[in-house]
Image (cartoon, rainbow, N blue to C red; front, side, top):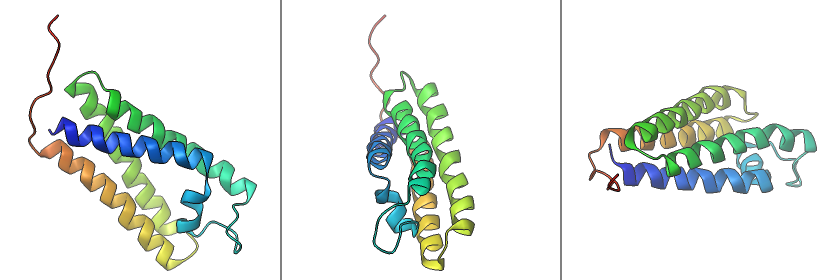
Length: 129
């Protein structure tokens, strides 16, 4: 496992999730869920924010996990969310190009997390008890 890589992925995921909770258009526009003028309907924003909160929470769990076992568990939750997003968004988004992009991004982040689990890294330093 490469804890440094996984914590970096967690931090990036948390920042993105927090940004989307504030500005749902960051996810709605590339997903094809924004109105033609670029605005995000209130109902769409309401549906996207829980996904963003989930990303923020799982990213923070990866970033702040107190030990490697907890980091592994948080990463597996993150991977499950990414693969779930891939399965859902690749079939449900309105346009083929948006479905393809969502599939690539979701699988890409999941694969990066899997690589972090499989790639050796230096053990984390632990404080003496």
